[in-house]
Image (cartoon, rainbow, N blue to C red; front, side):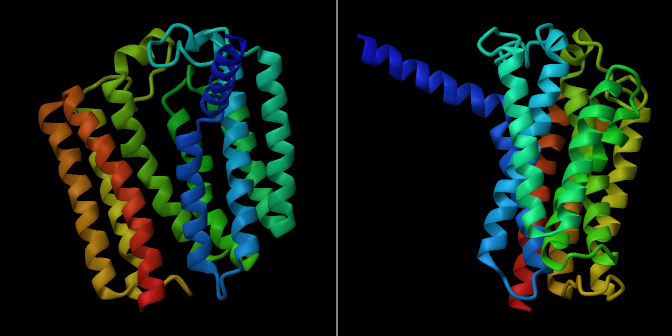
Length: 297
């Protein structure tokens, strides 16, 4: 009986660890960073690739843990977050803080082994997410703009890890993921509007599920699409895109734009959820297309 109870406790601990670090989100961020590295690498070094994967996970995991510590009293008010480890009482703030601190130190240290610039951008990402974005979420919808900065760093971070320099190439990758953040998070803010309101979060640019928010969602999606095809024109240094890849990237963007227009027309939670799902598929596929195009071209 004690063996069964011990196994259950171990499963619970693992589950809570995954939740406090938001494992699925962290892994998607690692995927972005690795994609950026493959795009920037002149010769792929698997040691650096491994360091980037672990360093990226530590970096995002730390940000998420700090975020849940700060928002613990608000998380308990919302259906989507009330069962998180801290508000549910399964993990103490002290334990979460230890995890967040260890992950911060490990993340910056591992990224520093790659190069100083990678560590610097990783540290900036943790700072902005934890100390600026998180406190602003209950103050102003502009928090989404601030949050889009650390959210866009991973794709760029991979290139910096590969080249140890910042230029037009990682800048373009940053801009692409930066503008993607807005339709993605506004879609989430739309279909979770009532639940967010319980915690005092108003993530939509107009604070309402209205035409104004839908129009801005469309506009930022268009900007995202335009930036995504810029490399085909040969103006982004070593970041290039073939015509075939550019057409695929454009079509993927137009699918997402279609759902943005659907949100404008219907203004329903279902339409918002469809846009959110399309945005997740988009950002994953576009990174795959960029990387595949580099190695096939």
